[in-house]
Length: 333
Image (cartoon, rainbow, N blue to C red; front, side):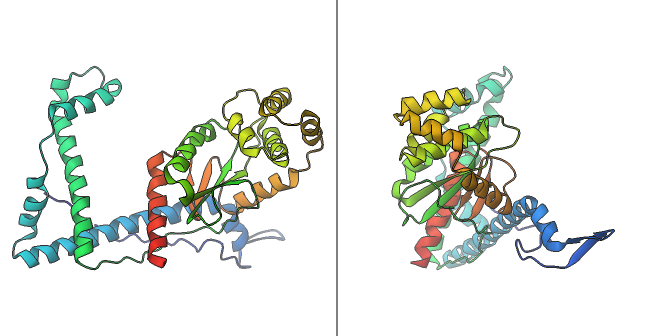
């Protein structure tokens, strides 16, 4: 059984270094000159995605090479073949799936199985569970081998330089991981992601600092006004109370925002004046400008210590990046 594989081919992507900037002219239209800096700014979201994809492939390839070397070393130390080592440490130590595990897997996915019975799918379910258990044991065994044979990796992920803009934040400034979010209160995916972020903050506590930045999309009728309203709540020291309530309501019209302000316990007169005069527009514009410069072209967009994560990602996607950043922090200390 193959528990790891060699990278079949090298990935060669000529991806320009993000943000390097240059006055090199790459096109002219009449007297109009288009520079490389202008071009890279225009396509930066795509470049960021390419850099992330490239790093992911390189990281997976590096893990495969490290695993291969560790297995070889341990097999040699025991005087056996790699195949025998795999049999002893993986195959022989993974139990057959129980009836309860098979039933649970079937029940959890029943809606997508198009009416097929458990007995019809039993071979596939058993095979899936075996592969899952083998993968888990493989990970455990690799951790054991990494401790036994001094193993370090120095592959650095692509990082986008992005600040918090002095915007509202949860968590201590000393937290080893900072998540900067660019959100739109009218975006359904942002609403879904807000529940995931709440789970992240509960799980990691003081290890994570979360920063909200506004990125109201032009085609969302009330998104900009909702961002203004949240800023007005912030001026009264109740940003997070108002922010959290915004995800739970459907009416983001001006009357709806004022009703929400009343329910949040804000001074209604001050809130109404703030919403009318919009003293925080410049800060919201700055969020949009800096988000766009960092590669944001939709919402939600997150930067986990500068590592971009786009869309309403599941908890596991955040956990993978946060755990990796915490490990990197431990290595530095």
